[in-house]
Structure formats: structure tokens, C-alpha cells
Length: 280
Ligand SMILES: *[C@@H]1O[C@H](CO)[C@@H](O)[C@H](O)[C@H]1NC(C)=O
Image (cartoon, rainbow, N blue to C red; front, top):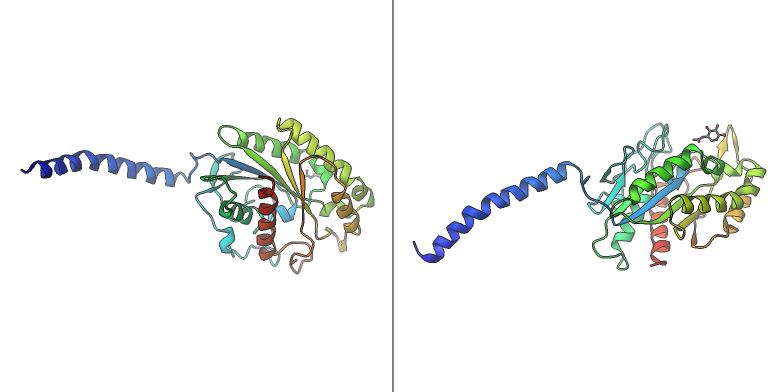
């Protein structure tokens, strides 16, 4: 045998088992759904139904299943599951979290997509989304000690552990506070307390908060909340450091006159990504 041919045979004999072992490991990892990976940029998503996502889920009692390319899954976008495990994120992002509701497309997936496509996004970033929204909840349901607040903080703590880094809290809530004038008037103060408490409990004193200006009022019975303008005014009056405001007003609303459509959520996701990127 020529020396070169002998070397090739030796290489094959040694390399083949190694290659097969690597392939088996890769198959096992993909079967685990990427659960062994940790994100590098973590975002908490909280609020009520428009954060939970109702795009394509506003007529009948089911989601239409339409996933635009901007909401498609990617190996670089994970979500913290209801059982606190990282898994590849897919629509509906709030499945199993926004309990008791028919969930559809929200702003989280298009946010991650737009962020990862931005030249400003750190190279090799893996986005971790932590869905925490619950439909119909007024901000009083998110005060420190409440079920919603404690669930969110517990999930954010798990998500921020290890190599994950909590980059921002995305907040889309306030529709339920349009029903009563007292709630609308108290909104800015309650929001300021909420932000202060979250930052303290997560030991992240400068945690970026991106607040979405609401576009619609809540329905209760056959009446829609009267205090949309007042809540919006209060939202703009929130005074805490490191708070960004993104306005959903003007985005397309579904026939239920309450929820953003799938395309509106895609646009909102891009706006949220732009707001985050502007802070880098
Ligand atoms: C929200 O608050 C109301 C009134 O206190 C309560 O009845 C309801 O159970 C709360 N909902 C959630 C999801 O925390």
C-alpha cells in the first residue's frame, strides 16, 4: 500500500466512528428540542390578551393556524415553556400560559425575528422569550404579591439564571383599565409601582421596560370601556427611568374591535425590536 493510501484508510477508520458519534449527538439534541441550550438575550413578555396574542384567533373558537414568515420558528429563538424549560419557540407563543383562552399570534415571535435580523444584534445571539401574559387582567392583577406578578417573577428568575441575560420587559396591558374611571386615573401610579417592584425583585435596577400604548378598550358585557384616552394619557405620563414607549394606536384591529390582527402583531413586533435596538 502507498503511504498516502494507508494514511487515508487510517483516517477513515478513526474518523468514521467519531463522525457517527457526533451525528448521533446532534440527532439526540434536536430530538430534545434544543432544551439543552440557553439563550443569551432574555425578554419577559407580560400584559393581557394583545400580548398573549389573538392574531388569527378572533373569529370562532379556534386559531386559524396562519404563521407569517416573520413569526416562523428558528433555532435561535427559544421560549420558556409552562414547565420552565427552554424549547424552540413557535406560535402560539403563549400556549399553556395565557390560560383558558384561544391563543394566536402575538408580538413575541416577530419581535425576535426582527431583532435577530438586525445588524445591531450581537453576533450569535440566541433570543429567549418568556411568555407571561394573561387575557383580561387589569393592572391591579399585576401588583406585587398577586398571582400574575409572582408567576412572572418566578419565570423571569428561572430564565435569567445561568448564561441567560434579561434584556427587557415588554409590556402590553391597560385595556381592562378602561372600564372604570378610577382604574384609568390610577394607571400611571400603578405602572410606576409595578416597574419599581419588578426591578427590585429581579435585582435588575435598570431593567429596560418597553411599554405599548394601547389601541383598544376592553369589552365587558355589551359595553366597551369608556376611558381609553385617559389610560393612554396615563401611559404617556409614567415616569420611571429606562422606559420606552411604543404606540399600537393605528395598527389594524380585528372585527372584534379589541384585538390586533396577525399582520398588526407582525408590525408591532418590528416596532418593539426597533425600540430595543435603539437602546444598544
Ligand atoms: C384579578 O383580580 C380580580 C379582582 O381582585 C380577581 O377576582 C381575579 O381572580 C384576578 N385575576 C387574575 C388572573 O389574577
